[in-house]
Image (cartoon, rainbow, N blue to C red):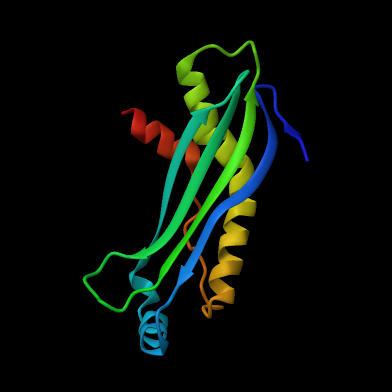
Length: 143
């Protein structure tokens, strides 16, 4: 599936790494009770490939930042290979494509896949309450 915009094309998307770890029943029961302590974290990185192709890696982690020893670990690393159009030379514009435009395009599906993993890991009631606004995040990071 090739998704196009004026600025870039998505050539492929795939899960690079996926992890759901709950070490035992005691941990599972604890985590089920304290899911409210978990937060969704997102990290975006990229590496240039040849001929204006870029691999964009989006990592979602669902983590408990408390001091509890009973924790589950959930993470997905999702790769998107894009090609930037030749007319686009400005570094800032390329950065915005990677951090906003690509994310806006792939995130709904990525979130669905990650939630399916979490639901299948024994947490069917789990929902992410906040929608991520990548444009706003980008703007805030610029300031």
